[in-house]
Image (tube, rainbow, N blue to C red; front, side, top):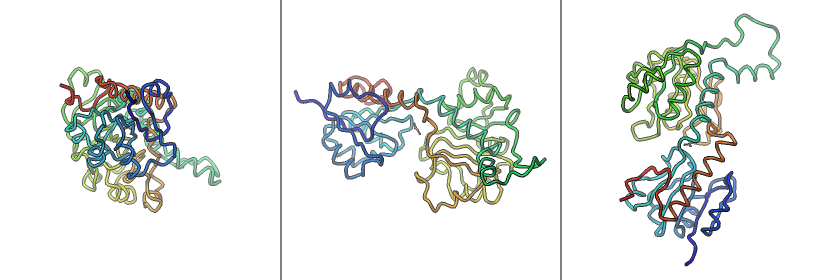
Length: 325
Ligand code: GLV
């Protein structure tokens, strides 16, 4: 029997040895993602694909994969994949939850602290030889300890943020599609509030909700207008949750004090984006899960999902378990 064909859309930080014993594996070795036409061509002949969040695995692509048996994404989010079409074709879709929770929350916390205390601006200031003396009002930021944190989406990463916030004696507010279990609220010391209440009250707002039609541009002018002028926004979820034009207006007009974003709309951020001119905005290139250990675990998990799919077994981490009888 011939071996199944697998296409992997980028080089991974994990061994492919076990996979190569089971399948004929082709890896896209360039730094940029495979162009759509290439993806289409490869998937047409693939039994399995291992993809990244930069690969648009849309309906035409899934439908062209006549022998496709598994789609395995090396990320927890999967808004780049048309899961509905995959499910209709009974193709399981894998992802990599849990292993990146702490790394992502650590990074979101780093952004929160950097934005609150203007760390990036201070570094730029110092390198520009502007540091002339100690000044009582030089680069003033805001307190983190004792402040109020608003978490949008109390899933795995939102909860990890709440655990960090407890160490800083913060009041913790959250919104979620559904209210969480009271026992979890007690453990995390988190209060369920409406989005409006959260925006009006929180000193720091951190986004940890998936990108869905409902969360697309969840942050627009109206949301920024409700926030205190001293508020700080952190986004490590998906760029499209925040309208970039509204974010620019909010920061440029001092509607909020600062923001720190690891994700943008679009990605990468265009070189002529006005956001790049703002001193009160920190922008990083979608690296919240990027610790060596975490990326190795994500790649290993994505390979395990892929192998399970090729072998007709249930994926250990499947986003559409309804494909199974
Ligand atoms: C990263 O953004 C992920 O979804 O894993």
